[in-house]
Image 1 (cartoon, rainbow, N blue to C red):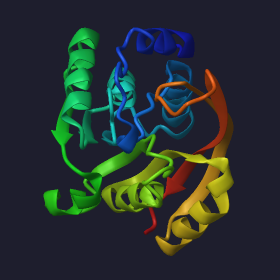
Image 2: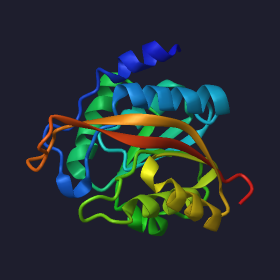
Image 3: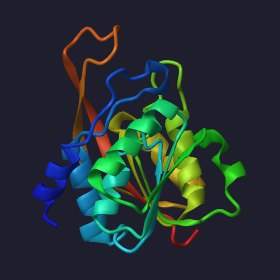
Length: 211
């Protein structure tokens, strides 16, 4: 599948109509999601034929994309029942079957797992940790690093790169910034005063194969 074809399919997915501010619900745009997934698959071969986890899957953009690209199985985790219902609809409309959705708080995901490193690859666009969620981005990362056997791919604000790098070292993961992106966030909440804002974001690969 070509990149443009993948992006076109992801553009057909429904996104949040009423995003929840306390959960920092911002959908991963089809452009960013398709480029992220295509790089993971084509450059590192970490999607096709792999078991994939999507932490904080939201409306399921990354989960659907991973399934389309040929993952053996995908599990999407999210705390919000409304988001998972939307993700379920997107899965049905996309006609992908190898995806399971689980409602859970990622902070407590360890208690659900029979063992760690159940997944070959973990992909995610975690909350950035603004407002009342300080540190949640690191919490997501640490959980992901425990779940993955091979690699973790995640989006983090560029301004936090040094902090994320230190956390990677603490968890014996090799970190590589694959791309510097501009994450355009449209006004979604009442406190937004601008129609949209660009946030500098890193697409990062964490190699955990030698942990």
